[in-house]
Amino acid sequence: MLEKPRIGSIDDALRCAEIVNNWVETTKWMPRLYSKQELLEMIEEAIPLREIWVVGNPVSCYISFNKELSQVVALYSDKPGKGYGKVLLDKVKKGRKYIQLWSHSANEAAHRFYYREGFKDVAYKEKGDDGISEIKFEWYA
Image 1 (cartoon, rainbow, N blue to C red):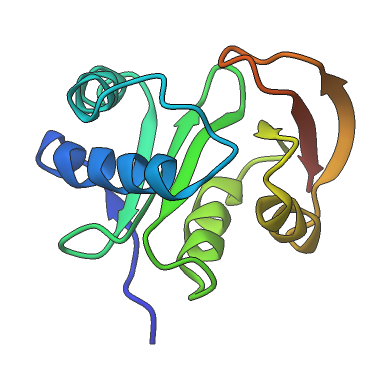
Image 2 (image 1 turned 120 degrees about the horizontal axis):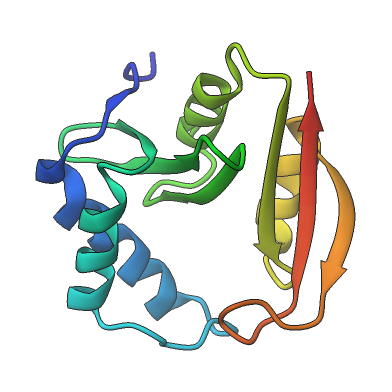
């Protein structure tokens, strides 16, 4: 049985930064834009501003959700395919009628996951904030 999600805290920031940092290191198409320390600082700044959910202690997966935009800003797991991402996405979906997110166009595994979870691709951006093309996904209850 999967662990229950819990609200993320500042104590989880380092582990979340490690998960993102490891993903960047192992993803060939993703350029290194930020150091691990910069990732940590960004996550620490986001925690009081966003809805952050995590699974595991230490954290194995986390989601960062901007409530004002109804937007998933980040969803990372050190154990993809184990169901943690679904558990966290379901937590964010609960009680909401709409969610949006942007995903790197090269991240085909993530796209398969989002399609399975009921998202539709609705827009394309040639260059996202990191210079990589992105696809916008939307979900409606």
